[in-house]
Amino acid sequence: MASLSWYTLLFATLIFLGGSAIGALAYAFITAYRQRKPRVGCRVERAPLFESLGGTALPRAQLELSDGEQTYSYDHLQLAQVQVQNQSKQDFDHFEFGLTLSAQDVVIQLEVQTADRHHRVTQLEPSTFSQPQAQVDLSLQPFNRDDTYTLRLLSITAQPNQRLGEITFSSPVAVRFVDMPLLEETLKDSVKSTTISLGPFSFSFD
View 1 (cartoon, rainbow, N blue to C red):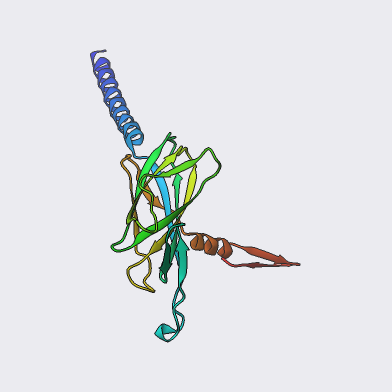
View 2 (tube, rainbow, N blue to C red):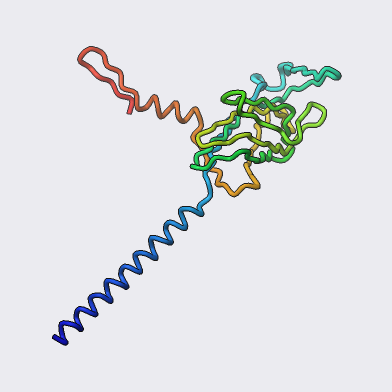
């Protein structure tokens, strides 16, 4: 009987210790999950508005833009489309973040595309033709889960035919910026997985 009680006590102790270890692991996992930073997807696509097709022998096209008071002439404009998407399970009443361009790249105009009139974007220090910005700080109101904002940056580079450099994302809010696939890559993946049927035949592009 004493031997049985000893084995019973040992078994109960092992169960207790095992349960405590599992409980501790579960608690650590839940705590880490709750403390992980919300994900914000980001995508940048660049397109030059002017490129020299025949070297320096051909005259360079120029675009003139006016702010109503002064006319500005550019021959090396770049257009960048930036998208941010709230991929977390957290809703933000307002969300501030910044874009930082590479050295000597600046933004002269910002265009915003939102889902509806209830979604607003505020540029904290507006970019103008006379005061271009290398750092663009923005506030999104609101930035709920699955919300996507699209920004078009009209930019200039230091040298003609020079590609717009990298654009980095930052925020005072504790979030993780993660890259989203480019639209070109998404289209290629879609085409690769396309199957076309013609009568009894089926053609796949996988």
